[in-house]
Image (spheres, rainbow, N blue to C red):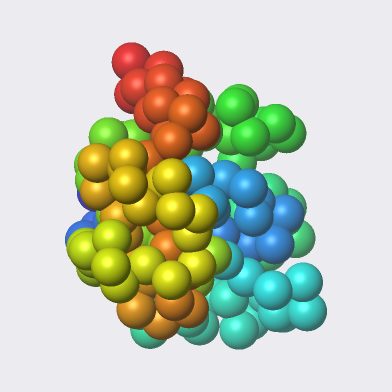
Length: 162
């Protein structure tokens, strides 16, 4: 993937991993839902640190901050809404919103592990008995399953992919 820095130079960024600044928290979670390794900045993370992390970890820093100075690994979005930002990001970075849907924790970005219903202690019994699959984040220990919200999210990812 290629991106243009502040100086106008084109840089190659591979594989596609993201760092969203704090203004783009919701977009960052959607990128995780699509299967992308996406760090999300905290409110007090300063610009220099974000630029450094993006370079060190070979991440594309996605921001709406016009004052962000630095050349490498920065992609500026002009849009305001999550919907518009997702579409703009699709055009500028060729994001595949169906890369690996629901394979990463939305909270901490860790790839999921598949678990058996007997291993799920923190979900309702009816879900244990009816869910086609269960996933757990090995880092934060949150358990996930397919529900009506998953289908709604998948429809949104598909719409951004078209």
